[in-house]
Image (cartoon, rainbow, N blue to C red; front, side):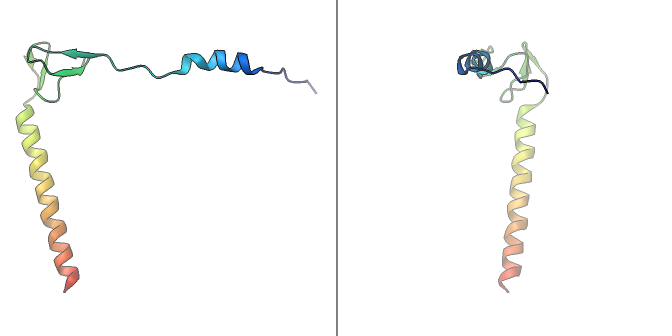
Length: 82
């Protein structure tokens, strides 16, 4: 049987020193909105000066889904009370 080599605390910590988290690199577009690099802005829907998707329509769609879900949950609670 082979005896395993010991790992000193120093060597372990030196190896782990490279495992730290890095801050995400942010960029500001023409409107002054921060977004991740190489990705479209979720607020304005633009990437490199061009509109990639309609952000207002997406936000409105999500809001409608949220309201519909709240209404359904409200109906279920009322039926449960009866």
